[in-house]
Length: 85
Image 1 (tube, rainbow, N blue to C red):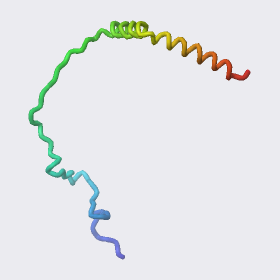
Image 2 (spheres, one colour):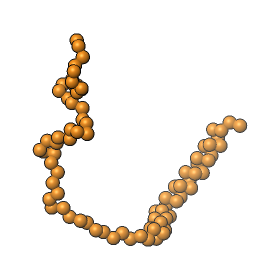
Image 3 (cartoon, rainbow, N blue to C red):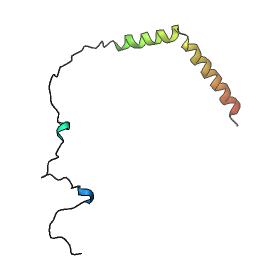
Image 4 (cartoon, rainbow, N blue to C red):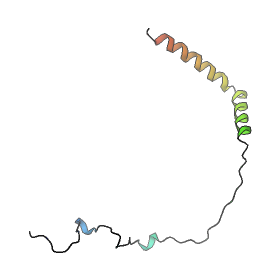
């Protein structure tokens, strides 16, 4: 089969490669419109240290601190038992 004289690339199933000269054609269902847009502005409380201290107070008040301490102790004991020196 002789080589084609045209410089275009033909792909299977009718697909054609995109190039800078051929813009992407979108179907009409993909059209994007900017109707009924709203701008939402919010203020955020920036008391980071207050948030951290509140979270730590809740951590202690709920008893999770004791679960953490017990877990560390049990983990240390199990590590000591299973480690061969």
